[in-house]
Image (cartoon, rainbow, N blue to C red; front, top):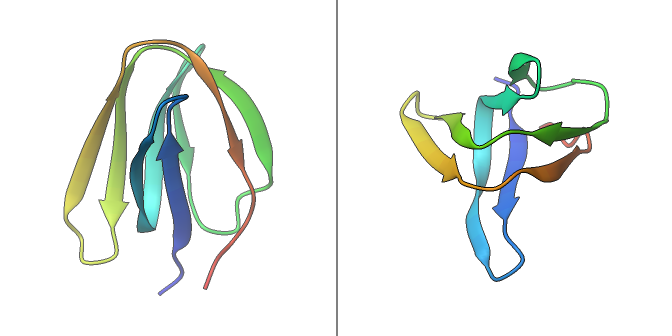
Length: 77
């Protein structure tokens, strides 16, 4: 199964790092789904919940309280 490396960081610390099946972000114009082999993307997200579907099918949630930029580079295995 294809996965992607997910790293969530703030200016102060690393918040989450792991392999995932997909990620759902609160984008400025609605939810944005990122799957393995997605094109590289730089986007601004709004405060909300980032949903991460792990390799084992469980879900992790990371809350964002301030807008920030995320860079996705296609790293799939």
